[in-house]
Length: 259
Image 1 (spheres, rainbow, N blue to C red):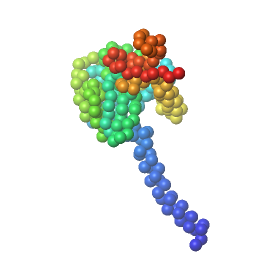
Image 2 (tube, rainbow, N blue to C red):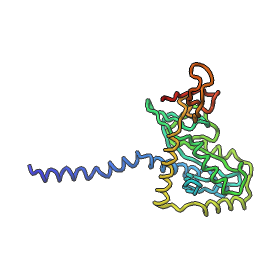
Image 3 (cartoon, rainbow, N blue to C red):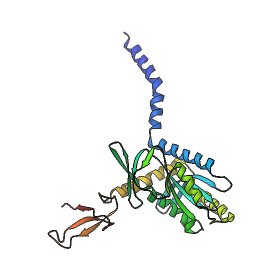
Image 4 (cartoon, one colour):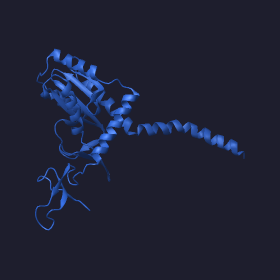
């Protein structure tokens, strides 16, 4: 059998499957899951809320003092400004508002991820600093898309897709005038960074730097809160330093410091 002909046949067969392999890889990537989740929320907002009362801005990248911050969706209305953070996840979700990290559990596998309430708080404070409106006119909303289930009690602004619309509609007190609504939209549009490969690369680099900094911090093994350096005041270990949970006495997590 001609070896060259055989290899050409193998290559031809592989060539047909290559696009499928690439497509499957893309569909399973965290990037695609994030983009698809944002797309779903985008469709949900457009079809569930009247356009004359809620003005949707999406994929907003704003400069900050230490880099950039990227906001999935901003809804501007006379009822306030809603800042939405989307999470496309599956499995069981464990977390509380004060924890620095939440947990995703799929069967026996557990994965830690940044508390989305804290993540969206930075978005909210960035907008608060550049918008000339009362602080109580800004609302943080966390939207989980996908087959996830909350296994701990969540605050009202952490919802599944349908709950997101109910939460937004529950804010029915007029807080902004029509002129303020238009001014908010103009300020955001004028201040946003134009999407480009360069701005996206810089934002990704900034996010990695922030994650690396957070990972270097000592985290409580019980509740995942920040730990602080303490010193034993009595007992056999008097004078010795240790890591103690910052939420003490609510949590009594301790990590010994080994020499």
